[in-house]
Length: 78
Image (cartoon, rainbow, N blue to C red; front, top):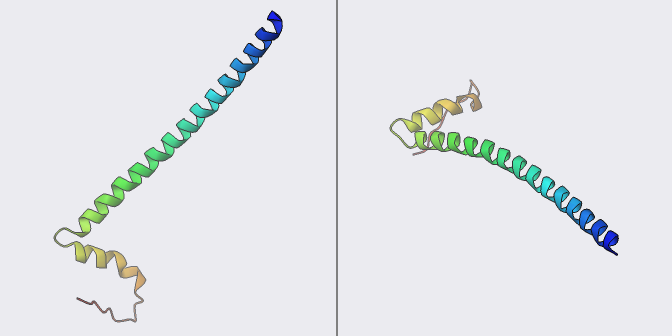
């Protein structure tokens, strides 16, 4: 009986250890993805903020130049 309880205890500890390891691996993966996405967010926030400073409209139009074909006339609505 003691041997059976010991076997059940060891099996439970092994399952717990495996589950804990999987959770730690998932946490590391999600943490690295969060880090990358946070860096992207910071760079996009800086770009967004730069559009609302003095001269931001000109910077925006300069970025959008490649979308306008050379033989087209640009129309800017105000």
